[in-house]
Amino acid sequence: MAILLKNTTFIHWDTLDFEACDILVEEGKDGNMQLLKDGAGQQDIKKHTVLDCKGKLVTKSFGSGHHHVYSALARGMPPPPRKPQDFTEILQYIWWTLDPNLDEESIRYSALATAIAAARAGTTFVIDHHASPNCIEGSLDIIAEAFDQVGVNHLLCYEATDRGGKERAEKGLQETERYLQKNQGLVGLHASFTVESDTLNKAIELMQKYDSGIHMHVAEGRYDQEHCLQTYYQQVTHRLNEAGVLDSSKTILVHGLHLDARERKMIGKKPCWIAENMESNLKNKVGTFKGDGLGKNIMLGTDGMHSDMIRSAKAAFFTGQISDTIDFDSAYQRFRNIHKYLNSNGFSGDGENNLVVLDYESPTEVTKKNFTGHFIFGLDSSHVKHVISNGRILVKNRELQTLDAPAVLEEAQKQARRLWKKMGHL
Image 1 (cartoon, rainbow, N blue to C red):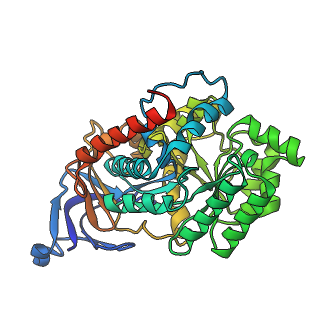
Image 2: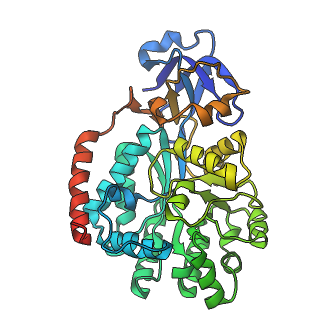
Image 3: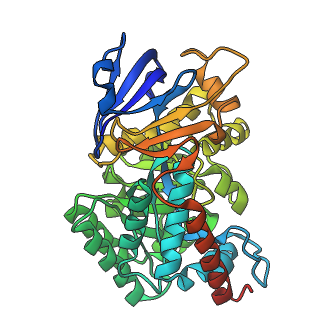
């Protein structure tokens, strides 16, 4: 059944043109919508699910360019016995202690919790980068099934790495190929300093075989560059360029903080993409993102800290006033660039029938000319009233429609405590 959004103010996500109209939303993956003027469609109103959107703003829903489902159960987790002194110790004592303890159930509830949070915040597409070194085989199917249950579209990968040895690295690549045989996805790698040449070359072979791209962390911390210089006698970007990583328009390089001018220029000339995750960078004290020289292919992610993309855009803008060249328009552009990444590369799940209805009351007028100012200083995820994904109502009146969210989150809390106990944090 189609959805009819009545009395809307529709905002085109790319041009920011405003239109007063009704909207007929077609059901199905990559479906369309029609903007109806002067009461068109009234004669068939009984055939549709109707939502009155008078006084509301309707626009395309949101997407996350880099997420980590596996971190969902870490919120509020007791600290490790030893306080990390730098980024490598944060990895060692927190994330590389957490991910080996993930199993099928904790992965499932991590994915369900992530998808629920995304939906409630208006996000209907998530690009995820997963790791669970003692539960590799089938892990991507678990995540995909959980996202599908909630109704959030996805582009997944498994993070292959040599940090757990060759056998685990090979299993990561095998999980990648198994998943890519039947699903859209990316070829995941952790970061240059944990990926040896053999694993990198095999990942490139998979990328080429399945016409995919690499999704990996790049120069998040200084150690990534230091290790590459000491081990391979070149900087990270040059190593990846020689391997062919940068040549795919589907490749996502995550973070990209510690890059010099030559590396930035190289990336700026390539078809690959950068995913900015400002809040994670601040939390890890690894530096702040700078878009200078990287070109226009910059999109935003959350790095697993949350699923609120408006919040990520605000963090990019406000911190960027000190460290970056960014204004209202470019912050909004980065926020929306995920649609260009997905659509230009032929990935499904981000059709025109993915919409968000915003209940945004403002003391000043909202127009095409000042919308990005409202986006930075006014709008937030609390204004998300309804969410439509693939032409289905995912969130109605701020309540998830596809699952019993309180029951899922209650079970997630049990899984979190079990995980923390396995980690020795309880």
